[in-house]
Image (cartoon, rainbow, N blue to C red; front, side, top):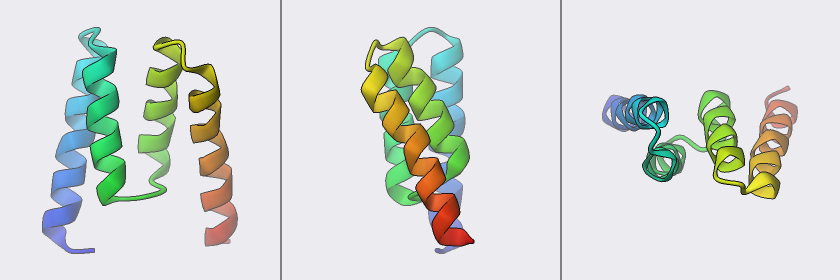
Length: 77
């Protein structure tokens, strides 16, 4: 991964947090998904995406994000 990709993913993540805090869960979800597309399996992004999905009443999708964190951790070990 190059620095440009990392910085773009970081900017999308930060924007997702800002949108979530502002109450725009749908836009936060879009930002977190875009960030995750650039940096797959990033735990912090998966946690936030899961929280957004639970808030959007997409509980199964939120739980799936948590399970993805566990799988990523197992692959890294």
